[in-house]
Image (tube, rainbow, N blue to C red; front, side, top):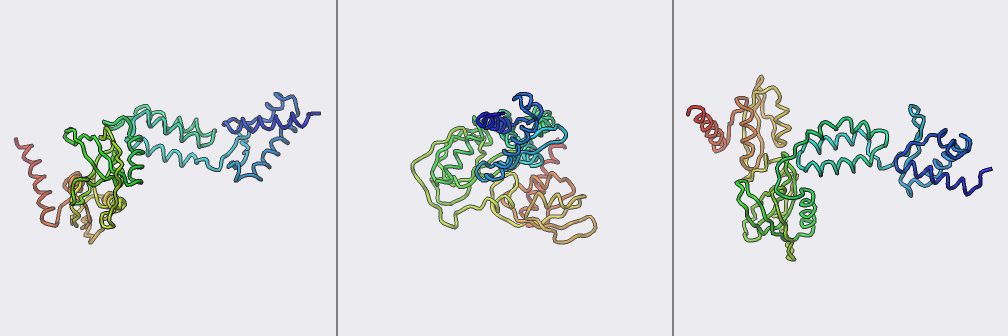
Length: 324
């Protein structure tokens, strides 16, 4: 007869194996411990009862049986479903914002939260994409480290100084009040106000170009009118080009007006005439011009006059290049 102490130790060992992602095979365990298969089945039954009675305490769901492998495995309440995990990983790969080392670390940690059975399948699905992964260029040592430090400073309303490379590669130093972080088109952006001016014009800094961050003891407060809504900005800006808010109007003759509406969340169709759609949108800055010009002859600027002139001038300058 198996002693109670031996039975308890055996159950603890079975539970531990399940915790670390192992599959529990009744026959194999019966042979290992020199007991009957029924004894192992009773052990598993008692473990299942314990999990059911103490779900809030142990945060596990159940020991589930797989008919295909004839084994039990431990399911967690906090496990990501494989369909959820693959969606997250595909977004991480597609954004290209992280170094390959950072990406692999993130994926490895995410996989630890899914079921043991699906990890091999996930590896198979993403192996080629990860192998051919190309990160965007960066100047900082770690985008993730920068994001975390900036996030803390935003929360604490703490002034900082940054060493930064401008788009023309000129290095600059700026003392700023960080107010928000957003992501757009491969890059994370820090939105901030300068400390040495009173015009309260928001500035955008690519997080990957920030090479050093100095945290100051000085804290700042913002009047309600200077607080920042990143959600509204995301809807009204393209490629993070700063500028004034304006309402533009244009026509579109392409096959998918929905693609335009998806790219410009504030856009709405004013009228439809055959394949021609007349749209209106509120946008910040001139980044919208870049997107609309990428649509070629499918787009025609209609207003306001300065917007029409910007598009016409850009097209004229492009034409001159091909005439030289």
